[in-house]
Length: 278
Image (cartoon, rainbow, N blue to C red; front, side, top):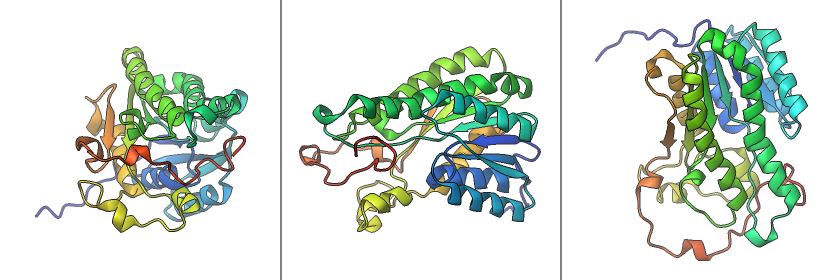
């Protein structure tokens, strides 16, 4: 066995992680810090989680800061980009993780709900990347968009959310071709079932062991599973990966489910506190 200690892969790099107050985004920010990067965390509502993550990074000797922005407002998205550049002095990696979900039967979706998901999940990362593009070109940096397995498989009551995540896959592929000529790599990650705080809010009796039995690998993922892939994609180790969406789902999208689960209403509500009218 090789006992050689691996050097941090992101030492000296400057990284912005959006939606890093909870869940996957918070762990992504922490993992970049563990790998030696200076980190800016962004939150919309979860100030406490983002602030505690910054404190953890400071304890590791990592330079980090947190900024708030409402991703339903383009002017705040652009302001976040400028604040990031002022604090870091540049940017080597942008992790577009921020996103909101909602489940509702197709015929009950209201226009303002549709608009809010597309504003936060699609429009915000588009214009944040645009704002930071000169700095990313200067550093020959990387952009990583967080999509979802919902972009590849259907699930009841997720018509709006799935559309936003499918849009990110197509956008990633197209933007990667444009920006590769400028030295910027663009890729995406599509997580499968990864347990985060919001799952417990919607489903207090969530049974992870039962959930794991429905996943080929046998268990539900955790945010660190996604964070490590994000660091890999931002590092020189992934220099030949361009325009791809890596599906990180324990094998979920690889099996063919012959069941009638799609006939049953969900029975839980996601999106409360983030999406109008829920």
